[in-house]
Length: 424
Image 1 (cartoon, rainbow, N blue to C red):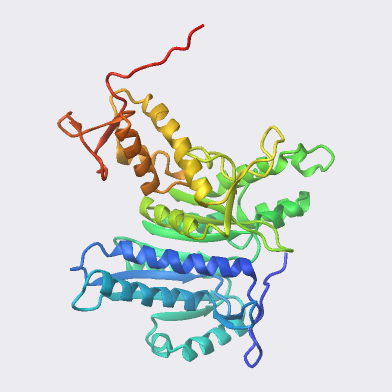
Image 2: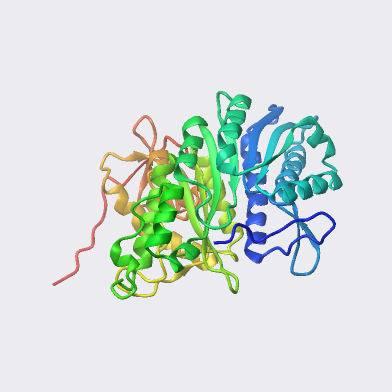
């Protein structure tokens, strides 16, 4: 696996941006803007503090397919901060702007990439941020610098531990499980946006590169001897490997919430995952919403509803060697999700005769569904209107809820339900 697809050298044209990287940058921008907006709950709040670590930052500038210069991830992050500030000022009708105390730490193991990035940042008007230290550039391997940047994030946010790590690695073995676990064990509100070239790993899977992968990442038990044997492997061996890999990453990272989706491959490039790992469900929900916004570029394989992600990534072949339908985060996928949840929600409530509060119901399923909280809530309200379920308040009385659910609203099946028994 090559170390990098890109090279930046001052005085030369920046590298061409691959389409899948452009997709990641667009999603990153929209996610960060929406995330920043969630951090400001009232117009009276006057400050937001956050550390963002761009662990594989590159040189900050590319050439797109049209031949135009476009920003790299460090500039995308800084522009997202500016956009969020402008939106808050307008949407909350603020009399004074809100302070975004955002420290951006950019890391790359290429000294020429960092040199190019500093040139780009100055050229884009961020010289003062470089001088003040609100934007820092570090040359070196992310893993070796992880202790330093985690400590810095903790120093700046000792109580909340709020930080976002953008880890757009080249390949699949540059971010070991121990580093992910370190992030989440030391920072209570940490998030990681991690890319993982799963096809590259699977396409060259053999005993040697599997052992190298396990040694570098600490991710064990990904494949069996049968998976490595091209003659003995089953038609759905990729499903097994991907599911094992996904479970190992999510359980071993220490994150509580996660989203895994494929970025659509471009010609000559295989599928890779964009994994979002976090410690707060709202961050997970914001990321899921961003995937729906960029539905032309993200895809998954498997059924809609609550069980799509229950075993991690599903391959294009299911466990009975049948091709699976693509879930493309479009209107068709949205309708399929709602249709499945109309059946799944009453079935799930049947396991709770006394009812269950909406918050607990949603959080118990958040990691296995592509649906956002808003989509789940909308489906529940439809079932309420159709008298398939009912909402109970704290006093035990049935509530006539039609517009919005509260976290403590209790969902339950109606006490008297009509059943249809087919004739024999």
